[in-house]
Each structure stands twice: as structure tokens, then as C-alpha cells.
Image (cartoon, rainbow, N blue to C red; front, side, top):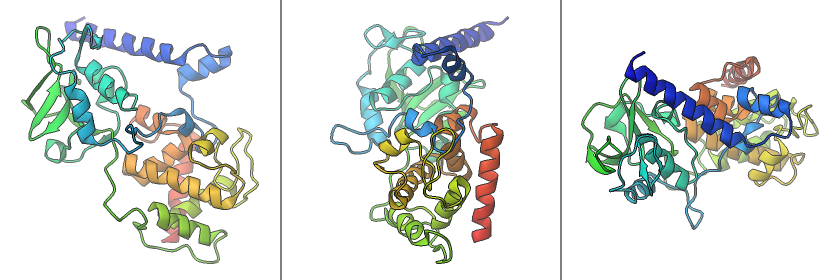
Amino acid sequence: MSVTDVTMRIQQIQTQLTQLNRIGTPSNAAAFAQALSGTAPTTAATAFSSTPPAATGATGSTVGGDQVVEEAKKYLGVPYVWGGTDPAKGLDCSGLVQLVYKNLGHDLPRVSWQQAKAGCAVEGGLANAKPGDILAFGSPVNHVGIYVGDNKMIEAPRPGKNVQITEVYATPTAVRRILPDAPVAGAAGVNPVGGQVPASTPYSSLFNTAGARFGVDPALLAAVAKQESGYDPRAVSSAGAQGLMQLMPATAKGLGVSDSFDPTQAVNGAAKLLSDLLDRFDSTPLALAAYNAGPGAVLRHNGIPPYRETQNYVTSVMGMLRSAR
């Protein structure tokens, strides 16, 4: 076994231990097994409530890439320590990246090759990178840094060195964006598709209004409602999802929905959730997969999870969406 193989195996073990620590003490063996297996939720929008909220600053404003860079700069001069996650002792490259994003409200995987799959891929590589993006290097990935701008990055380089700002000295294997792009000023209420759900569709006025308010295609909202509940505002799933858009109680609470059986609240909540997911994944199929199985499952599988329910869900809703156009 080569040194590289040994290093990768150690990183895998560290990741498994970290995941076990995060699980804590489950209430029973079944919950523990489910946490380890990462099985898919049995209903739509189930896992959203278990994922970290969008990062916000002290005043509640959304965190941007410049804030990521400023947070990373706090650790300039910290010595490199392999496996380090405590800045008082030292940091390695992925420890630095994980710590910076954790401080801003985003939980990232521990090791570099997993961080190279987090968030969304930036098409066009370094040429389209923005401050705060993660730059990954090597194949398999063995190093990560945080892009500063102007072809520079912050990194914890190697033993004997300190956290530093340096030129991007090699072509990144991957560029990943953890934070959603900021919306264009004045565009929050713009429907990106511009279509209207016909009046013959149940709750069409709600879909059209929420679509315009949150920038989501009304036809997408209508298709999700049909798939989730068959347009039944009193529907309750075996897993406890409620209402027209089948929101789990914890998810609904996080979206500001006090009554999931109120069609207006349910549609607005689902529109807000889908808007967030579309911004995050920049893909309608991936946003739908996240609505059904949770964002964590999409990130973990780097795409639509291999769950039959989720794959059928995405196929069905996308089919309805194409028919509506």
C-alpha cells in the first residue's frame, strides 16, 4: 500500500468518526442504523429541516463570498498541522475550509475530496470563480483552498508553512460554490419563466402569485402540488407530511408556515423552499431531488440520489412541467 493510499484511508476513517460523533446518541438502534445508512426520507421536503439554515450575519443578512474571505483571513499565520482543526494548535487545508464555513453557518465535510463535491460546480473553472469559492487540487483531490479573487487564494499549504494568501499556482481540479449567487437587485419578484398557470388548474392563483413573489415557475409549483397531494389541501402522509405541498412540521416551521393545511401558507412556503433550492443547485431536477430527499442527500451523492422514490419523483414532476409548456 502506497503512502497516498494510507493517507486516503486515514482521511476516510476520520470522516466516519466525525459523522458518528455528529449523530450523537440515537434514541434507539433503528434510528442509529438509519443515520448510518443515510436512507432516503419517505416523503417530500422531509430532510430540509435537518440541514443547516442559510448562513446569516449578525444582522440577519445573507453571507456573501467576501465575508468568507474575511473570515478566512482571521487565520492567516496559523501553522499548518496535518489533521488540524483547532486554530490554537494548527490547521490543515480542509480543516481551514471547514472551520471558516462552519463559523458562517455552513457545515462542510471534513476532508478535501469530500469538500470538492460540496455545493455546486462552477462551470468554466477558475475563470468563473468568485471570492469564497472552494478550489480543489489533485486527482484524487488532496488539497483545497478558498478563492480570494485576482487569481489568489487562502490556503493551509504544508508542514513547515502557515496559512497564507498565495497565487493560484495550478489549475484546480474542481471549483465549488457553497453560497448561492446573490439575486439581481430588484429581481426578487420576477418569474424567470414568465408563464402563468391556467385558471383551470386548482389553486392556480396561488401558484401564480407565489411564483411571481419568489421567482419560481408557477407551473413547477403546480406540478409539485399535483405530485405531492393530488391538489388535496388536507392530505397527510404516513410519515406526517401535511397539506397541499406535503411539508413536514419542522420544515414548515423553518419556512414560517404556521398552518400547512392553509393552501396559501403551504404554497408560499413551498415556493420559498424551491427558490432556495434552485439558487443552491442551479438545476430544476436537483432542486426537486432535494425537495424530496433533502439537500444533504443530493450533496452526498453529487446528483440525484439513487433512491427509486426520488428518481421517480423527479421524472414525474419534470414530465408534468414539460407538458405544461
